[in-house]
Image (tube, rainbow, N blue to C red; front, side):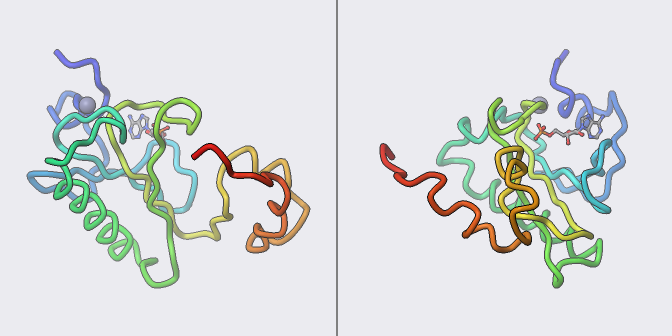
Length: 143
Ligand code: AMP
Ligand code: ZN
């Protein structure tokens, strides 16, 4: 039996709050929403992280984004804007190791996400992030 939480949902052992499903992808409401609408979109097949996708998965990854856009349309915020984002491994905050897109909408979404940006909270409006970050990482070397 699988130990993966999302595989248990796919297998029907745990019932997610499903909003969309195809043979390839499953979308359901996040149990701990970070926005008025917070969906998760994942492949029906277990892939642990973004690092584990291969060249044979390109169509599947496209289907994840198609499903994310559908979730956004169905939730009614496709035109006003939303975020479809994937965390990879510990430093990005991945806690469930079954590939998934977060689909967040229904509120303003600051850029960039995460605690490093929140250090600068109060230094400016959400969208002048370029100013906030100027000089913070002066040399993006080594990549
Ligand atoms: P991540 O931290 O990027 O791996 O995202 C995992 C997400 O799964 C988090 O946003 C959790 O709130 C969500 N989550 C964990 N358990 C459940 C569950 N039983 N049903 C729905 N969402 C869940
Ligand atoms: Zn899994």
